[in-house]
Amino acid sequence: MLELRTVTSDEFIPWLHAESRAYGNRLDNDPEVLRPHFDLARSIAIFEDGSVVGGAHSHSIAMSIPGGAARIAGVANIAVQPTHRRQGVLTQMMRHQIHDIHARGEPMAALFASESAIYGRFGYGIGSLREQWAIDRHHNRYARRHEPGGRLRFVDPADITRELPEVCRRSTVGRPGLIEKPLHHWEQESRAPEHQQGGRGGLFYVAYDDDAGRTQGYAKYRTTGSTLVVNELMAVTRDANAALWRFCFDVDLITRTEAEKRPVDDPMPWLLADPRRLQRSTRDGMWLRLVDAPAALQLRTYQTDDRLTLQISDDLCDWNNGCFDLAGSPDGAACRPSQSTPDLSLTIAGLASAYLGAAGFTTLSQAGLVNEQTPGALHRADKMFAVPQQPWTPHNF
Ligand SMILES: CC(C)(COP(=O)(O)OP(=O)(O)OC[C@H]1O[C@@H](n2cnc3c(N)ncnc32)[C@H](O)[C@@H]1OP(=O)(O)O)[C@@H](O)C(=O)NCCC(=O)NCCS
Image 1 (tube, rainbow, N blue to C red):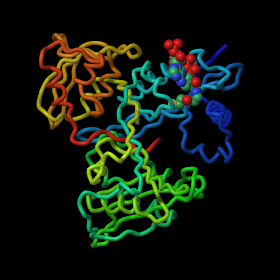
Image 2 (cartoon, rainbow, N blue to C red; image 1 turned 180 degrees about the vertical axis):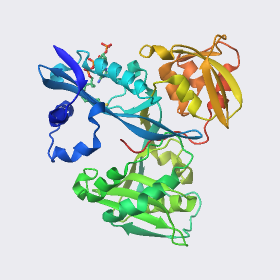
Image 3 (cartoon, rainbow, N blue to C red; image 1 turned 60 degrees about the horizontal axis):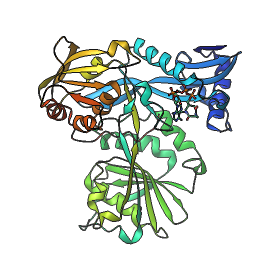
């Protein structure tokens, strides 16, 4: 007999062990250090005869959206033990969790998926994309000569918590989809031995200071054999951006540079003299769920001043089903239930992919996720939801 409920304090460690088993890992370090970061009221499990067979967690996080930020649910630690896979355990937990998030008044939920086939059925859509890069040393010249105005320096890992979060924040202003990296993640990073940070090779932090001594960017990288892997590169200014990538390309003994989790509209490929040599692959980044669709639509701002009637279908959250009148502008929005004829009809997952700008309505319509009822509505929706910078979610939560 399966029972779904929150875990008690005594069940926290068995709950972590069940998650580890689902991923095929062992809990090597003392799991007690994780306890302060979990809210037991949001840690759910499915029990069989008192033993955890599956679990999931959510916590409140801030995500940047067009025009500001929203407090939403960050969903993580989703796991079903291999002994109980494909018996509907995840389905039960997802249904319960989405209703719980709704009851908490959080209008959206976000997660990172281990496999991209899992969460669409629960109304999640791709909220942001990311790219993976690789380039050979012989082909990484810039098209235009770059004369750095500042200087590079290594940062001691012990100092990253003090130095880098503010640079990270300034480098991403105005971009949707960003989840603020919690301080304890920076602290964990700064304390962890190099071999645990990224798995391979040594890990290094390099900062770029402008001629006034102000830090305008940093790169976090590791080396493995003759490959340099850029885990993270954040730049506030274009000078810092060009200088940091140049550095990551030119380190001696390196023949290849790779980069992880880059935004799809990153300026770096536009610096290159021979951009075709940059191998790029795109994949899903963060998955977004509009838990309370009208509330979420009302939170963001819009590029144009316009109105649209949206007919939303949602298999899991009945309150999202129906027509909503969205009146949006660069100053704000209102979204209310409506009796009008819809301009567009769409699935809740399709709307999630359009929400931060990862996909346009015309594209989604061509994939069958949106239907245009009023001629011209797709084009108007594309203009209304347009974002100057593509959504990006480089930090896991
Ligand atoms: C992925 C995982 C959570 C799925 O749990 P589960 O209890 O087996 O899922 P369910 O039985 O509720 O499956 C619901 C549906 O999703 C499908 N599904 C589940 N996992 C899937 C996967 N990895 N790939 C494709 N489809 C999947 C099922 O086939 C089922 O489809 P149906 O409704 O058409 O029959 C579980 O296998 C697991 O923990 N895997 C290892 C850890 C992991 O990847 N966790 C997810 C982290 S984001």
